[in-house]
Image 1 (cartoon, rainbow over the protein chains, first blue to last red):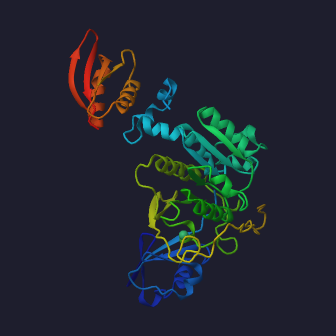
Image 2 (cartoon, each protein chain N blue to C red; image 1 turned 135 degrees about the horizontal axis):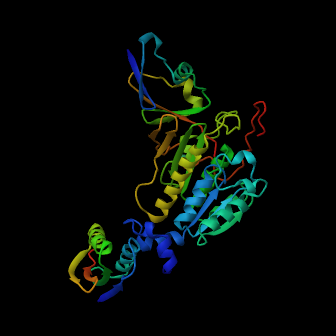
Image 3 (cartoon, rainbow over the protein chains, first blue to last red; image 1 turned 30 degrees about the vertical axis):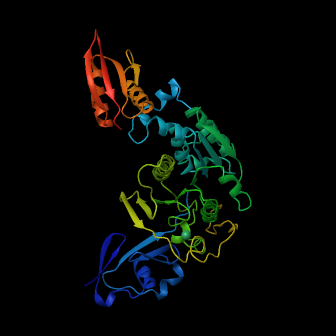
Length: 70
Length: 271
Length: 74
Ligand SMILES: [Zn+2]
């Protein structure tokens, strides 16, 4: 099994189902790619970089929503 | 400046705190905080800052109280529907604490005027309800060097971050700019749990008071996220970005621009 | 320098607030003389002063009230 820590929680993936990029991960989680920025091991990744940002076993990922309400 | 007998009684629970004392209370009374947006976040922030004895409270909002506001905007009462928000909020602040002087700015946050307004204050609370305004306040506070509290809410979740311009990560370090389309837009159809805005707005007031007093550790360099459904508070580290378009090494944003209001095209939404 | 503070008739916790404000006005090392009521006030005051890190030099009982000499330490 491969795993990612997403927003503080461990998610496990079968090796063949492990997403390879941030875009693929968001799709798997059902999160719209324009609704969040991501932080991969402490580095912020902007939406336009999601398709070319690789995701690897053991990484810590934060998905931070755009929240415009007040 | 010395505290009157009435002030000693009114602020006794502040003064007795080791980190506040009489000197701290006098500092609050001589401090000026601007609240931009008198909605869900601005309502509790204004009431708590007034109660705490912040001497000057600026209110900036060009809107009118609407019946749909009352579910979360607790500074406005049923009888205020139809009134200017700044006038409605001003009367409650004065009723809570006559020590709080109120400066009303019955306008929308705009690029051509916001800098002149915010430079009169020691701390700014971003309690606005749209992305263009949030980025405008971030940029204006950066150019004027005024610390501020960012917050946003959506449905059952909220986020919060304090920014010391030029020293700690800014809103653009995390979110480069408004999201494409209407993602995360504060649409009436998305809904929001009223009490959520009370939690987050109260946290913004907490940060303002800490910053004014110079006590504790500010919520800088990390974004606090809160989920009302799971009761999870999480701090996500947010470092300054060298390539931030505003506060990075080679900035491309060097003056204020209005990003234009986000409009919602969802069916039945008035925004 | 010795400053004086008469807190007879001032209830808790307002008396503690007044002590705190008075101590802020005394220089570190100087003494504040406090007159305070018997009962709850005299029970609470030493605890409050201890929490603030101040030193009680002397406590004398008068008729129905107490007189404390406190040295500002912090
Ligand atoms: Zn920045």
